Image (cartoon, rainbow, N blue to C red; front, top):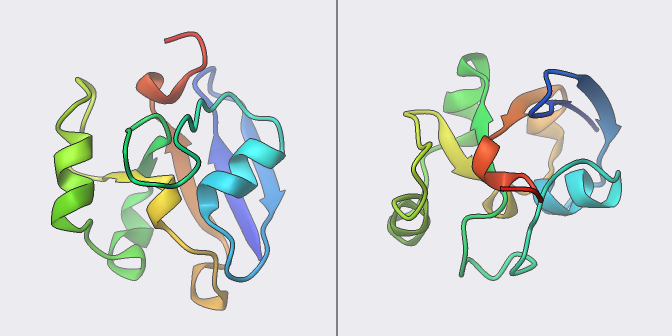
Length: 107
């Protein structure tokens, strides 16, 4: 499956993801600028992304726990998600998202 990611500098990357992987793992393994400190344990918000508006319904809403983590960063928007909570699937082939400034390794 393909994921299109715009990084914090505005550069667009087309990544190849694997079924069942967390989107965060794909972004991290392709070497983009994402901290992803907790490795997907839902104990930080360092994999914060903005989901493209065309994909919001398909990706779905965040859980209460995810919303609590998102509340810990200052750059949350209505389309914010933690990429560790989005699993790659055929339904998400072509997913478009943008890395949030707070996900940057330099933040």
